[in-house]
Length: 125
Image 1 (cartoon, rainbow, N blue to C red):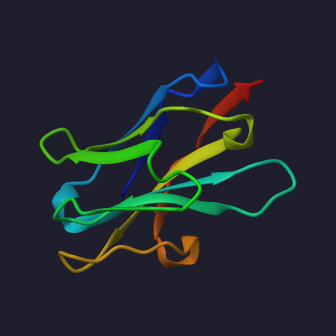
Image 2 (spheres, rainbow, N blue to C red):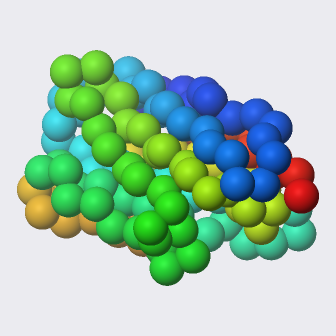
């Protein structure tokens, strides 16, 4: 059974940084593409970033240049480094996993099979 556990959320002032981690209990972690999504109160879940099995990153336009996704297959962990945080970044951030071809990722949450419980990120102005 696949489990994803996020950590690293918290309260930060605008302009600050946070690093989210998602630890996966997956025997073949390198077979999975990974994604980060977020959901703010009253809004739909939205794509933030994804990383393919061969570590090619993809970003939503709203976070491009500020956020960096990476993965460490030896540690079964995917990271989201968030710099230049804005109040609009406030949301619950969740990681997701899906087995995909080596080069592929998805930005639609419906395309992911496994989800973590989420971690709250709050950015104050």
